[in-house]
Amino acid sequence: MNKLKIAFAVPAIMSGHVFAAGASFDARNDAMGGVGVASSNYSVAAPVNPALVAKYKTEDDFAVVLPSIGALVADQDSLVDVFDDIDNHYKQYNDLVNSGGNAQAAAGQLSQDFKKAQGKNAAGNVGVNLQVAMPNELMSVSVFGNAYATGIIGSNVTQSDLDYLDGVASGTLAADPAHKFNSTAVGVVAVVQDYGIALAHKFELSGMPLYVGVTPKVQKIETFNYSANIYDYNIDDVTDDKYRSSESHVNADLGAALDVGSFTYGATIRNIISKDVTTKDVAGSQYIYQVAPVGTIGAAYSNDWVTVAADVDVNKTKTFKGVKDSQYASIGTELDIAKWLQVRAGYRADISGEMPNVFTAGLGVSPWGVFHIDLAGQIGSDNAVGAMLTTRLML
Image (cartoon, rainbow, N blue to C red; front, side, top):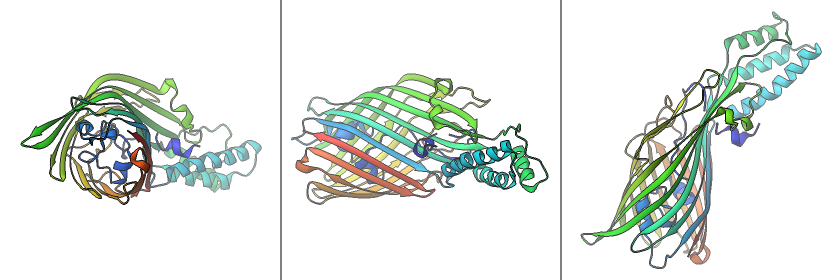
């Protein structure tokens, strides 16, 4: 099994949690705990706070993000490894049964694997975005494409399968080559694609710079509802058209930011238009993925060598209906050591208590201030790990 890909697949029993979609990965912001509403650079601001596209330096003429990528997974119970064990141990069990060998030990091992998978889940997301920003006094513009996939994997282990395997293991039942197992590995994926143009302008409010922005965008939402026998789960089949549902609609983000001396205060609302997308009915199961408005406020302090920022979601982020919602608070800092080297760290927490909390860190290298390479890593509760990379060309 492909361990990276399988971590992005959502269970038939929506009892776990799932990372929120609808945002974008940026290694600078993610290294600083996931902040950005008041502290994003204009070159990467479009998916985070469109108003900041208009906050640029006089020497800034053009910027391209090419690209920004990231992934974050949480597998507290090592479910991905358990599915690999089931795959291997079932083959051993099946070979023994079909050859007439003694399958008691193999049945006992397979029963242990099934029990390890029972009621467990793993969550994760992956994303990529491209941006082209063109600052201008009249109207700053950023054209972008952002794709973000999120989900969980889980299992439906039947008691009849456990009873059968335990019976074979104890010798009270004879192994039957014709026996069919009913337990399944299950997954649902949501892929949100945004294609938009951020438009921003700088105003003056009592002598203070006020930035206002809007991002009209076309939004495509694809869902994949996949189910297979627990010993025959193939993540490559998830994207087959027979499991796919897709809808498109128009949406928008709104943002504002205000400079007060060395401080910046920001606010944004992403996805102002709600949208529900229903998955295909597979094996009698069907789910609803929700796009809904999310408001975030933030503040940042910045001077020539340090930036400190904090963001808080003002409402919960929805994903699949039935999954517990999340609400994030983030704090982070950046030290600009030598104008070409930046060191960053932060912390990101779900104040609703549902999602993993993560510590973040990263580096930025920007020789000559033209080509920027940003790296970030995240580690936290529930065995959550993540990595991000952003490359930017700024002229």
